[in-house]
Length: 447
Image (cartoon, rainbow, N blue to C red; front, side, top):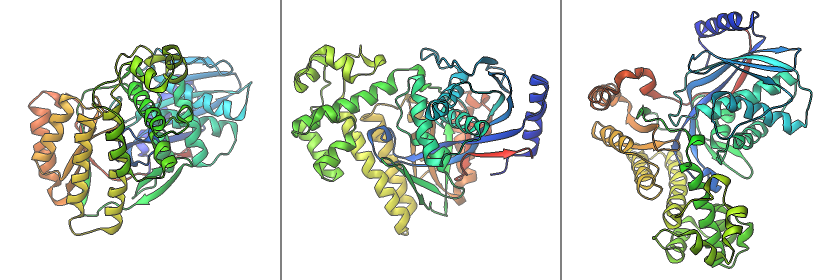
């Protein structure tokens, strides 16, 4: 997707006024919308995202000093500079420049480099922040590709995605790799089934008579700033360990729910039955988890839980495992329907999206009242299916809408959700828009 010339020219002008020089090259990395498969990538399961047109764009000039100078076209994000040889990332403060530093440090550590040259970088993003469209991961990916280009090194897209997924954890988010993978592996015109271990991407042709519409709830949620996300990761880890122990597997080596299924060699449907038999719906206390696993509270805290989840008092293991195994099955069904393309394809895909939202809301508890309201409004005005997308607790919904219903759908949703609540203060193009699958990250020289 070509970058508009006026955006590049404006970026070049601002760069010149900040640094007194002109950029040598530009790097772009897109945001994404996850069509189906929420909160399952870090459990080892496949997801089905597509890149969106919105992106992070960085103008870059390598410099002889060993200093990183970072600036942002958005005045809300202050300038930052640091020594390229001493990258410190403060996990307690998810400030914008820390995401850049994650990507930079990931490449630096991958190649075991010290004494790096510096660079001047100006970042311009048009992905709404904290919206669940992966603005933070797009910035990590963009920074990783910037660093690789400045160093004159080469890596495959898969290697870049894996490095950037790992390096985003420097900021304290225990994510699974979907966002970085689609940012690099996306291709215009197709969604992707992203599978892990090993990482690979397969084209998924979406129905031609329908469009996907993104609607922003205007409730912001920052994954790195809140513990909700990491608590879910740990609940899934604990559920995997309890299921493995109950089935006499080597539970201490198990980290993900997918590993339990793989080791048992059973279907997702059977894993749902095993979950029903093994785990109870009442929340587990840390003491009960320890009792089930035969370990001490100290071992639980230091060997299994992440630092920011050590004081959690209850874990809902049954609900989280039920969501993960059922959502993993929905992803595979979604892909199968896209391949077989039956006459009622759009309706069937919509039903899977609706089921996904119910599971996110009730079993994974990652929705919020505004998202639920927005999903209801979207369905009321003609969406065949609608669900939260991204981590949840705010951010966006994605809906599947028949192409001929799009104009009335957009008008009705705008009036019902944005105008009636005074939320129309947000720029409309950022709040409610139809999207089609965009291309992945790329480097280009001056236009």
